[in-house]
Figure 1 (cartoon, rainbow, N blue to C red):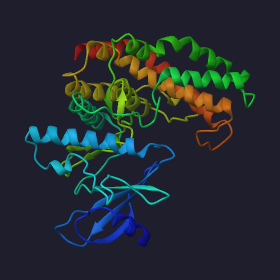
Figure 2: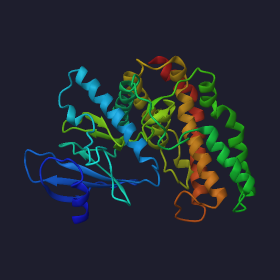
Figure 3: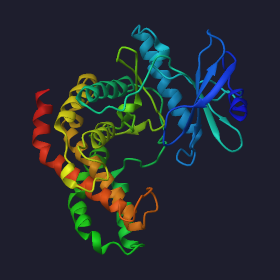
Figure 4: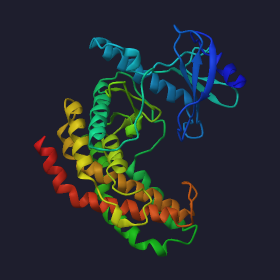
Length: 359
């Protein structure tokens, strides 16, 4: 705790630190709850930023500051109550920035949101809440005046991901190309259509907007009455197509099986989750969405299992250099499961289109 207390002392906090202990089980950043002695002082959340993933920490924090500042202004204009629980608040450090570099690691401190919790539950009810919350998040940021950078360049760029796959095939570093030819052929057969977003963007028909780019149920905070307070985990907030937030949520939550399910009979696209999330999303996002964005939501639902299939397969061909594996063919099993999910999404596309048109 002593070292962490020294880090906290670099930030302009209220109150006296009483205790620091690990918080949550995040996969990217190390997170701690900082409790204060005084009843009148807030508690805080301390995070060590993973700068192996987020290499430009100054840009990362600049993005987050712009987003939270704009949301706070919108909430104030709306006359919202309890604003400090509805938007993240970052604490300045001695250097005037919202992060501190201790010569080895980057740290940031934010106000702890009291009486709030997250859920891991994936069902239609919480999928609807997620649709409303992430749609509203995009809606509030639709007119943000700041220019945000890409915290992870080409994160959801389909053309870039296909280029990585083709380079892996050309190198065939692990000698695995021959055994996966079926999947390579199937992915290439769909490649042109799956790069539709990038083509529409270049044609000036599809805008990039400020998106969350990591739309999970547990990236929302709920109050004690079960109402959504705010969207959290803003590290990946950056310009992208709205397809990122829509499709990525459905890839993980609407899959009836596991991401690495060996039994492909378990893997299907759950239309109840799709309907609930889409209903909530359109309720809060329709005000700013263009027709081209709405009509391509089924494409977004297919794009993300396709993209993840491409990424898993490229890693398998490269000899498993990126994703952690638990057994030798783990990335191949993941590839097969994502491809089965893609096929199920494709089978449900007419039904998805009809549902969207009826909203």
